[in-house]
Amino acid sequence: MEVHTHTHTARKKWTHYFWEFLMLFLAVFCGFLAEYQLEHKIEKDREKQYMESMLEDLAADTLMLQNRMLRSGRIQKGLDSLKTWLYDTPSAEKNTETIYRQNASYTRQIIPSFSDQTATQLRNSGSMRLIRKRNVANDISKYGRRANNIERTCENFNEIIEDRASLEDRIFNRKYWSIIATDTASSLDIYSIDPAAKLLTLDENQLIGFGNITDRLQLFISRFIIPQLIRLNQNAIELITLIKKEYHLK
Image (cartoon, rainbow, N blue to C red; front, side, top):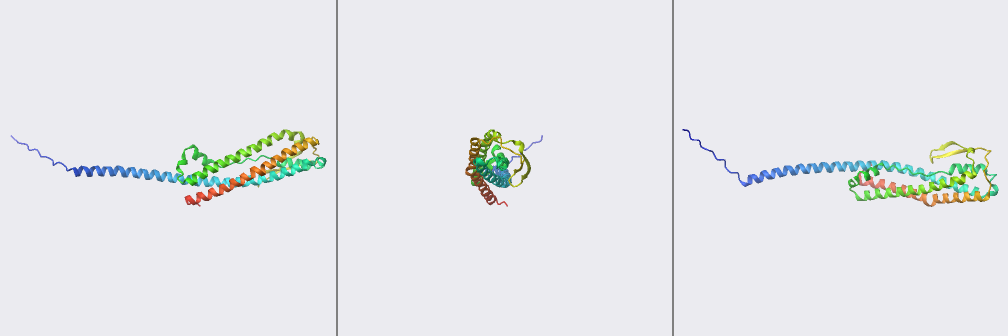
């Protein structure tokens, strides 16, 4: 009869289990750390991409704002001149062609069109949190609010233009003017006036009333629209400089 002897495995010391636990902990921790570092790098890359895109938007905005400043300045001067011609009621009939040209050329709306795709995406996707530099994030928000302000200011101006149209139709016959070209710098149309043009009325009260509204329009441009456009253009330039500095972009 065979006798089987059982071999007994020596019990492992507590230090063995400690090292096993430590190695497992380090493996998990290093994996977590690597994942965290990867996520951090991805977010940092996305932040930089957003800023590069923001620079493109701001560059487009500065071109647009410069165009609107030029356009607004010409409209303001044109309306100021039109007001003077309208107030000279005794000479209105003699100056009919000039009055027609000034009114057709400078009764124009002012509509800013901002390149806000990046800012809108940052807001709507909750990605503003990616902008770690608080000074940049704050200035982006301020710029957006100021852009909204100038949009509302121009909307108010354009509403006055629309309201003024009913008075305009009592004085001018639109068949006497036609567009012959467009000034590319200001986007203002250039008009030709029929030499046979006649005003629908020479009534002094109507001409002066129309001149008064015209005066309010040119004052609105000089006091509100142009100063806001100038400030916002400067804000855009400053924000471009800040983003380039903080993110080492060219």
